[in-house]
Length: 507
Image (cartoon, rainbow, N blue to C red):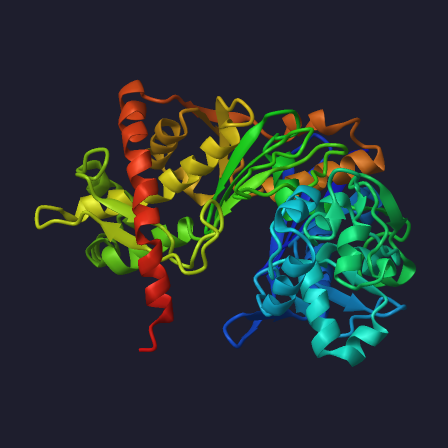
């Protein structure tokens, strides 16, 4: 009898549940959204009970397709770098602080005084930042002492759902490495950092392999979800590392680029990539013993979406009137502009920037605009600016490891102009797989399959993905972009003072 896997991708805006067959076929998928509470400009929280409702609702929908007796295992990928305080019974004590919650700036500054930032980066693979879990937990201790006094463990999103499913509290190395409290060199919680934060080691959950069965569906969870009591629950992992598995980045040097609202370049290695300027990050992979360095830019697809909404009103009107695809109309304009957009640059820093700038004051900028520039030049400049920034990240990693081929997923991977632009700027073959939006859930499905014994090892990902298209760099284009890249970089550095002055204005 065929066996199936349920994988959940517990993201920022909702849960995507997928049902995969033993042969790698995507049988069914569904989603359930939940809300985020934003406040004071830098706070973002979610109710963990909303996550559980989304898990219950989507699981029941998937089980309309197959029998609960045929489910071999369940695994989650989840949003990372959060902070959920639970009591000794695993009950949430307050809403979850998301990765984008930046309230703990004082705690960030405090840690920077206690530990040399370079030394910290070498231990954790990350900068000291309010984005991470340990700084958030420090904020709760200082500002909500009654909550902190009752806190037994700090969890991430998928860890809480695992507890609701099987009654076991644990995390995995990938999520642990997003807390800023995990030693990537020794694969354990860092006593040095936790001591510097003046926290107790007991607050941090046991770390289990991402492919370990950590428990079984309890009777109460079975009643709510419809799953069979006793179904294996596999530990799972953070969404970034799960996506790495879902695109086949499971062996030394394999590289991929997710091109969505935000975008990242990531690869799989056996040792941390230590960038002297701390421009990139290191994560533990869900593949045991491997690491998953990445560089993330804030507004890739978001900059493109801004362009569509603010600069393409004419194309939107034509699309509405004729039914022609608006993106095809935009591509027609971009094709009319030559490589380099007639020497027009766009810096895609619409919400500050992480990699490679790490500058919250950075702004989106057109530079070089003249009376002769046309609409298509501006559109091409936006697409090139996004890709040049990602290409800069690729070059940082290329200083440490050869990169000749990059698999690209996400919405941007569907655009043929963008595909060729990436090949030329990244100076690498661009590979487009059959699934562009399911990588994270596929990664979780592979974890469930290995953990439950349905799959032998990670090579099973070849059942799930196939490369549909390969784009090779055009030598002439590569040379032109090589000339443009340092100008792009110099433009950012020339404007850093202006960005700071703009941020400081009291208008």
